[in-house]
Length: 301
Ligand code: R5P
Image (spheres, helix red, strand yellow):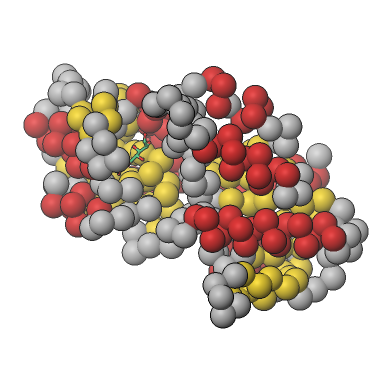
C-alpha cells in the first residue's frame, strides 16, 4: 500500500500502532511551540504522491489539536501528498449539533467545514456524537466522505469477558444512546433499553425514572462520552433503584473532567471502561483494530 501514517501530538502512540496494523511506513511529525505560544509543525519524511493518514484526537485541548491538524494537513498537500485521510478518533464539537438557543454557533458544522477546507479528502472517526437534527448529518454539511466506526461491540465483548456478566442487559442513558445500546447488545446477544434525559445545564441533567427489566440482572450502561459524569451518575441511580444486581459503565470517549471517574464509581458502578480515543486510566479497549480494518477495506476498494 502506498500510504504513510503520521500522528499529531495528541495521539502519537496511536499513529504508530495504526501504521503497524496497516503495515505501512510511519512518518514522524515534529511539533513544538514558539516562545509566543504559536505552533510549529514539520513533516520529517517523504509524502509525495502517497496517501497520508493523519491521526489526531481532539480531547482536553481541542482548539490546539485542531490547529495543529490544519497545519499538518495543509503542509502534506504542499509537499505533494496524493490524498489526505484524517483519523480523528475523538471528534470534539460534535455535541453542539443544533442551535439550542438563537444565535448559537453550529460548531459541528463549522469544525467539519474547517477540517475539509484544510485539505482532508476523507475522514474516519469513532462513535461521533449522534446528531439530534437531520440538518447536522455529515452528508448534509460536507462533501468529504466521513466513516464513523463504532467501538460499542468491542466494549460490550470486553465487559462480558472481564466481569463475567450474568443475564446482562444493555442500557443507554438517553434517547441518542439507544443506537449504541442496541449495537452493544447485539454483539453479546443481550437485550437493551434506554432512558429519557433532559439537559438542564452544561453540568446538570435529569434522567426520568422508568420501569426497566433489570431486577437481579447485570447491567451494562453504554454512552458515547463520559464528560462530567452527570449523565452516567443519574442513569446508575435509575437502574439501581430498579433493582440491578451489578452495574458496569462504559463509554467510547473518556473525556472525564472534574472528577467524573470518582463520581461514577461513587454512584455505584462496579467499574468504568472506555476506549483509547482519549488516553485515560480506564482506556481498556483499543480502537486501532477497528480503524485499521475499516481503512484497509476502503483502500483496497
Ligand atoms: C450527550 O448527549 C452525550 O451523549 C453524553 O451523554 C454526554 O456528553 C455526557 O456528558 P456528561 O458526562 O457531562 O453528563
